[in-house]
Length: 253
Image 1 (cartoon, helix red, strand yellow):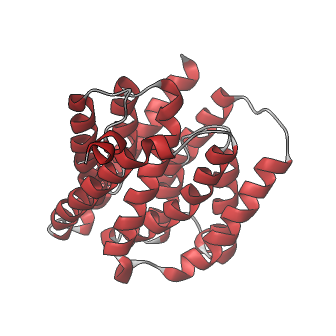
Image 2 (cartoon, rainbow, N blue to C red):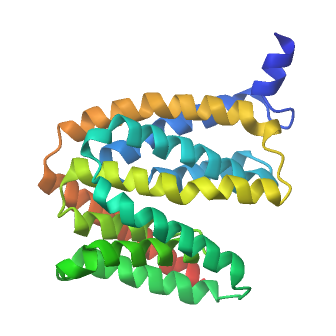
Image 3 (cartoon, rainbow, N blue to C red):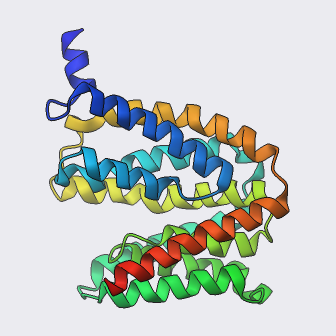
């Protein structure tokens, strides 16, 4: 029993911090399930205040993988699988390009570019159907996966693209976005392991946060089911706009 407790509560963290992280995982999963996006950024902010620096990004990636996967599982009937058929090979290509091209891209320029695309996708004219079709999905997946290795802010870009593609249908947007981000997050756990991060030391906490995320997802999806497509689209656009403005602030600061 004592060994199990020590596995669930990392030695570097007080119990109150563990409980705060579990509660935050539940809250942010509910937020993302209900509103489509935003929970991951809030979770990262809280984790940055409570965790050792070396554990923040790998643990956040693992918890986000679990959160997206359970949200995709709960909403599987709404997933547009044709989108994923083209998104998956794009993810593979983007990851291969990022690992093969040993280049250093200026983060500020990337952040400004991503923010601009998000704002255009949210408030600009509808993009042509060909751009959201098979080829467009493949390119979007490859580009966003490639950029995610240089700046960790491509989730909102994928979300804005999928919202346009699904024409604001809230259930399809949330479900397909969750599945797409599961595909994009999956290879990162392997990358962090190869880089030397010891996931075992934090696996118990990650498991508790993922379980809390399941509860939050169920609660959030209940709210989503009561929200109209029009209201969802408006809230989704404003959340993405806030994230885009945050990127601009980071780039200019």
